[in-house]
Amino acid sequence: MNQTIRLTMAQAIIRFLKNQYVERDGAKQQFFAGCWGIFGHGNIAGIGQALQENPDFRYYLVHNEQNAVHIAASFAKMSNRLRAFACTSSIGPGATNMLTGAAVATINRLPVLLLPGDIFARRNVAPVLQQLESAWSQDISVNDCFKPVSRYWDRIQRADQIITALPEAMRVLTSPADTGAVTLALPQDVQTEAYAYPAALFEKRVWHIPRQRPDAHALQRAAEWIRASTKPMIVAGGGVKYSDATDALKNFIEQFGIPVGETHAGKGALPYNHPFSLGALGVTGTRGANLNARDTDLVIGIGTRYSDFTTASKTIFQNPNVKFININVAEFDAHKHSALALVGDARVTLEELRLEIGDWRTDAEYQTRVKQLNQEWDAEVSRLYGLEHGPPISQGEVIGAINSAAGERDVILNAAGSAPGDIHKLWRSRDPRSYQMEYGYSTMGFEIPGGIGAKLADPSREIFVVVGDGSYLMAPQEIVTCVREKIKLNIILIDNHGFQSIGGLSQALGSEGFGTHYKYRGASGAYDGDTLPIDFAANAQSLGAHVIQARDLPSLQDALEESKRETRTTVIVVETDREERVPGYEAWWDVPIAEVSEMDAVRAAREQYEIAKQKERFYL
Image (cartoon, rainbow, N blue to C red; front, side):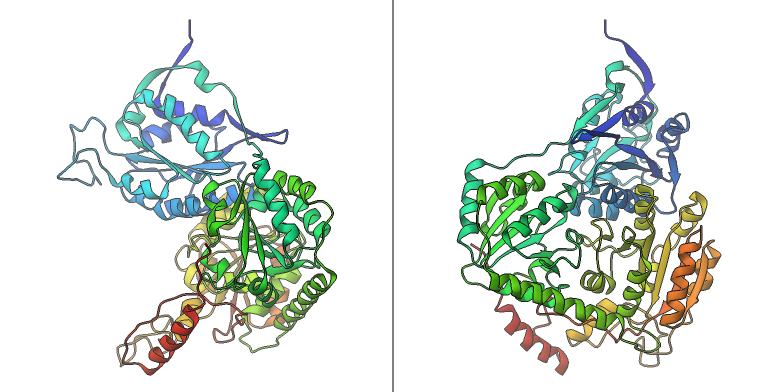
């Protein structure tokens, strides 16, 4: 006779989540670290009550539901996607606040479980508070908005439906290829309904994370292509790090003499000073990586989805005979650019491909050129670190000061604005986990909650959160979370009086930085008055942070050392010169410019745009 346990649907969900484990390469760990959220009428009596009676499944209070998902996504990334958080909200604005976070998780392929409350399944009291009504269906709510940004979506209309829904949710969350946001919409009445669940549902379950091997014939062809190439180049994406393939990559390139360019997600796959490391690739790339990409005859993409920043809007690979070999667990990504697809785990694929290639190596002249490009770039980084600009100082000098203060395992974390491009170029990575950039969705406001997630994933590392003033003003409230949970972050708040990144882009497009300055509205009707007197230091201090104001490079260096000694979250406010930018290097980004305009600068920019766009290619 099958044993059953009578629980509410919400209680059953929490009990199930507590007993989910993952295993890879013999290492086993609990998958869920707890739940973030805010309670409202749509979840407090269900999921809230279930969490209350399960204190060993820790609940964390956040101050915006979007930030809860950012914390969870960053935690999953720092944990190599082998651990995750659940996030809960009420129905209505609490639920839709999580939409941006869901997009972040899905676009970046990071496992996050979303448990938004939903409208009454029994319908008789509808419309309830915060319900979206439809004239053509009663089976719709704001939670339907999660469908396009979720890898798996389900609405639980009966308490027994979680028996089949929860295993499906775990299948997706633990999939190396299909992971992302998983949304289980939970009607508030059904959350509280009891059912006699089979006890087997709550037994400890271990999900094995496989290392998929590529097709043997495709592996042989790939080896032939590599042996026939003269200037091969690897594009290292996030899959290198998620599969723990950094050592396999190092062995591969050293055996065959193949250089590596890194995407945002892949940065740190090699130490910055490895002679075959060309650093960042693409729009935010180094001169060496982009020059090498222009001439390469074979691109070996490893764990990359080839965003437009990586390919410089399909202009960076200009060799007319260029071919692609893609190593990826996702068949969808492996076939991009008409590639020879090696659908498999990055680590085992590199190991097996290395054996298949055998005794072959790029010529000495090519390797010498690569090493020269590496050294030239290191000299350029040193120049930008030591620019001695201002005050206000340059953003490149800020990055250099953080790099000098950070230990080998410490982490720099960022997401949006001009900083991602500058950090991608300039950060000297010494550890695969030392660079955490949310650049799949590049979400303003991600930085501070992202820092919380990274710190929770590995408390032994110092986390240096770089946030521009524009991003800071969108989500400073999680400093309160840092204080309450005793989570120590080093937050470097760059005050450049507005949106530096989009301001620079606006200037490049002939639009003069329109609408990107933090200034009073002037007599002309535009924002061209005096700079707004925003006191970021006072704001951060009011939220409970230790605050330091840095006015030049020496005081910034001192502030960073003081911050490292502090035991509570510290915010360092430093003003930078928004006009002193890190240059672009041999790459272009397609941002369409107005085809007709009364502005001379816009017309001139459009002419240059038409010329640059001619380099875009289809790789067939």
